[in-house]
Amino acid sequence: MMRRLLVLGSSCFAAVLVFVAQTSAHSYKWFLLYEPDIPESLR
Amino acid sequence: MVKTIASGVAKNLSHILDSDDNVEIYAYALQLVFMLILNLTMVILVAFFLKIIPTTLAFLAVFIPFRAFGGGVHLSTFPRCILIGSCLILGSACLAAEIKIQSYQLAILCLFTLLFTLLCIVRWVPASTVKNPVEDPGIIRMQKRNMFIATIMWTGCITTFIYFSHNALALAMILGAIVSTVLISPLGFRLMGFIDRLLNNFGKGVTNS
Image (cartoon, rainbow over all chains, first blue to last red; front, side, top):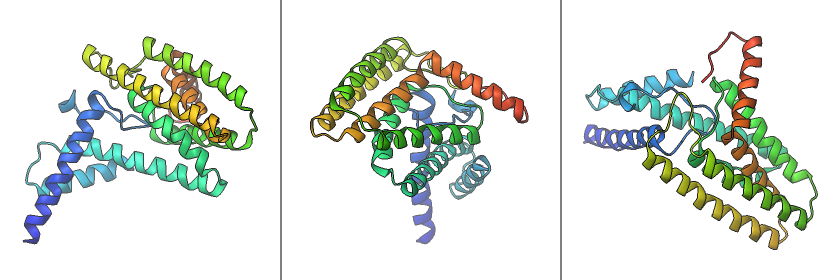
């Protein structure tokens, strides 16, 4: 049960992270001051 | 340090999900989130000790959307960005809290800032960098439209603050627009390039972004 909850939470967190990375690489800039290097897979 | 922590958390996350496909993407997003949180926490804490929270929040309310939609220049390392950026944010908020300015002066300043912002939208938004160039015409059009909407909302807020005589907050919002639009314009790129080169001479010689 706990394992399933952990995987579910991690999946949601991962989905949010992918959304943040995708939008930041293409349109909306989440960074205010420093711009980190974009990973090759998002170029 | 932020990069190391982000990579560690990303690896743990991909381990839990049994997939190594998106580790780079997770690390990139975590880096963005950590830097944003660290940055805003530091600025708010210093603002709290300086007792300039209202003007700092008013400044950030303009600076964040204008930077997000309009883009702009960045320094080559995170410590430099956080130092110079925090100085700009806190310095402007401090200035807005200290200066006594008349409503008509604010209105004139607001008008000139609005004209400069509109010029920025037409000419330079989205101001992309070498690391992340924006070339898609659809994205450029969307960013210009979003920035225009943010500018209309900014004008509405400033007018309301001037009408209700909240001059310090109005000035903070005007300074937020001035700082973010200057960082979008070529003047900001030249200025930050100069600061970067100057710091490179004192430091280890970090490459420009």
